[in-house]
Amino acid sequence: MINVDHLSKAFGPKLAVNDVSFAVERGEVLGFLGPNGAGKSTTMRMITGFYPPTSGRVTVGGHDVVEDPIAVKRLIGYLPENAPGYADMTVRGFLNFVAELRGLSGEARKKAVHRVVEMCFLDGVLYQSIDTLSKGYKHRTCLAQALIHNPEVLVLDEPTDGLDPNQKHEVRGLIKSMGEKKAIVFSTHILEEVEAACTRVIIIDRGRIVANGTPRELTHRSEIAGAVRLGVRGVAADALTAKLAGLQAVTKTEILAQEDGRVTARVFPDRSRADGGFAGTVAELAHREGWAVEELHTEEGRLDEVFRAITLPDTVKGGA
Amino acid sequence: MSAWTNIKAIMKRELGGYFSSPIAYVFLVIFLLLTGFFTFTVGNFFERGEASLVSFFTWHPWLYLFLVPAVGMRLWSEERRLHTMELLLTMPVTTWQAIAGKFLASWLFLALALALTFPVVISVNWLGDPDNGVIIAGYVGSLMLAGAYLAVSCMTSALTRNQVISFIVSVLICLFLILAGFSPVTDLLVRWANPAVVDVIAAFSVMTHFEGFQRGVLDLRDFVFFLSVMGFALFTTGVIIRGHRAG
Image 1 (cartoon, chains in turn blue, orange):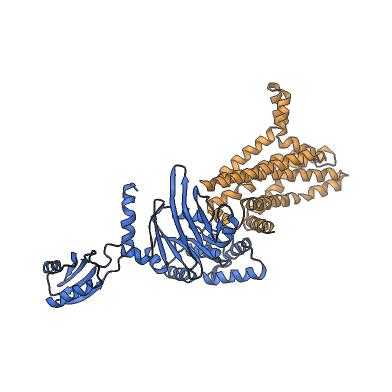
Image 2: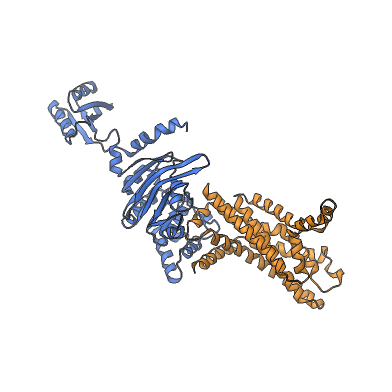
């Protein structure tokens, strides 16, 4: 549905987006991750036709966004950054206005407004003007606006920003369920969100794509992915390290905590010897040595660690 | 087909925006008070002893100088300040539809304000026997004048997210449009410049073109002038908005 091809955007001498390419099909939810100012919003603005690209091409549903912007805009529901809204309008007036611009009228408009009001829980604030709304409601109003014409493509710039944890959960669920039938791109800072809702993740830093894969693939790039976390009693930390070092499959042991006779350690496998039985090997050793095992599991790897590893060096170098 | 639907939707929203806040009512009251004051007190309506609205229309270029930019200053600067411009221009709406919708809504609002001056027409008809054709021409001219100023304010409001700056710049441009053909200024210019040059400059003034309407003359050239000022200013608005987006 969305095809982004070698897209770049320059503001004066500054390259905000630099040669970005990706595609999103129906049934996919693409998470857009990156530090502030990485070019997430700029990319989204080019997809939705607000900014013309400096070079490269965007097509949505086969329509080129520069040549046929109206056809593209019809297909897309867009939640801009910070969820703008006309301050002096009521929620209902605003949604009616957007529905009208989306070509809905009469009974169809009434139904559409009713549907999004239910979806985004706006019943209580329908007749309130937008500038009196709390941040969460304002955000949901703008989200409702993006969904009003039941678009095939959704572009959401930080859809959960400013929501409380329950609302975040709701919105995430909403995105995930809508993602089965639509093509969705959303940006976020919240990594757990990506794991909860996305089928694919792109990490963008300083205008470039630095990682692209499923959430699982990316977490596997984490240093701790595949390591075994071990909590035992009845052995000293030094002895534990020494014994573990004796195993061929172990490259490194890290003591995480020692208290009340319990030692918690993270044991790193030798990644070049690819086999699945690393946890078993560690368990066997513990059994042989007669340690009382209280905890033993394989770490999944964490996205935030990957994110930091990929984007932090640049940020530091950049002097930001 | 959808072009007009879109323009209508935007007009409706914009007009609603005026009336949902006190702005519209404050403006209408001030406008009516000032037109009354200028017509009857400063313009010596009664002392003139003639059944015409000359003292009413003469002041319009000066009144509009401040009042029209006050109406137009928020058109785009507000959209930029609230970031709703991003929302509006990612709807299936072309930029010119958005510009036209906003402009027409404000123009309609000014037309309403102008229509509410109907008591002066009744008064003058009650007191004497004026030429109502001249009065109608005056109203048409006044509406054209308001439209030209409004298009200029629309342009300046697209330049900045600050309404005050938008207001001041638009007052300055409109002031130029007045002074270029204001007789004290043109009399002064004639001393230095070739009268032909002064005429060319004066041709750019709203005063020169509003005069005909006040005398009851509907000249095609005057219409062309006002409509082309509007066309030019609105076209420039489009260019400015495109410029923001191109970065």
